[in-house]
Image (cartoon, rainbow, N blue to C red; front, side, top):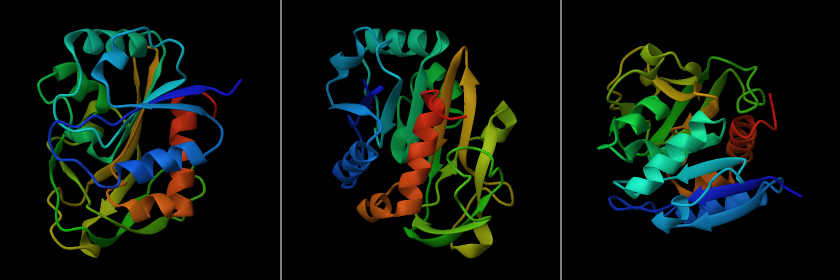
Length: 217
């Protein structure tokens, strides 16, 4: 039986038009049984049957108090969490979430081409990528630098390659970390529907989800 993923896309703030394309891309990875929901009550029940929980461009406050407790308990006990793009614009009023994810979104410049610097090419989410990855996205700035919180930094932004960057020479975009016994993977990429058609980005998602779900090392 294929590992189960819970893909959660509830929004109470900005809603990305790319969400359907993102869900379709995760389904197309083919290695998971995907359950997609926007019902906050879906996280109120036991989560231990899922290999990973994926927050795909969620925004705003999306969980019930019980859902917060369930998600934290799931991660601390060894579950997997994947945040894609606007997952960093989520649950600003829940301090645990910001700690777990590694950083919260602050701002972004215009959607535009730029260069991503792949710092760690040994991770399943990045080992297929070139050292310099040309991509088009929103190039998120974050409120804090997740590197300061002990994350394993995988990809950073070359701010000289696009207009409007606000974090300077050390600008993380993709990272992973441990939370209790669990695994957390986050990628800032994924704003547009076109991103999810990109083979390199799909493999990036496959590797990140696989790592969080303990299917790839």
